[in-house]
Length: 285
Image (tube, rainbow, N blue to C red; front, top):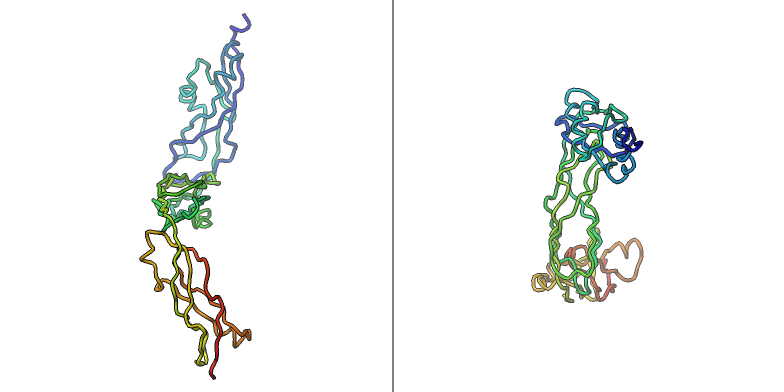
């Protein structure tokens, strides 16, 4: 008989906001967890852990278009509809949710792909990884958006990759409740190719010859060995590479050899070696 009587018990649940105000950015001034005061029989109380205690309930923010707080008692009917159970929510604690408001503004920022990709041996990224879209729209207070210059994705983790593919990657969630992002995911096109070794001869250029000395280099050309994607093997040649020696190594640092440095090199090629990496020289004053 006691189990047939009516009782009131508490069930904690998380709030999910919907129907956001269009021209106002908000920041909740309380926790996103509330206590539902639920009325039910003793039998329902006995099985409450199984039949109620929902993971979350949706709360409409329509009221924020005209004021700075939301009252739960105005939404009890809709709250009860979400439970799909014969128990009845009679009140919510706290009954009123308060919000801090600032003027809402919009900003576009570039997407930063976070990746952790392991390739099969001899394979790698053959060209630019393409993101669609390249920019996302961030909405929130002006002072918060001023701190944001880019938005990162979740980490794209892949193993033993050896072919091109397209993936859908989520954007990282905002750490600020009054800042939102759209869209919530981007398309990532990953161009993958097999790499092979190639060697080209490149003439050396002299930099920082401010006094226009006559400089003889021995040798005048160096061999650059690198890995290049098969699809670009014929295309990439010595015109893509610039090798230099710095006269300051002699005039300032007093070295007796120049170190060969590359000032231009194809972005998606992988340098193996420069032969020779140091060259002899004679300076004619």
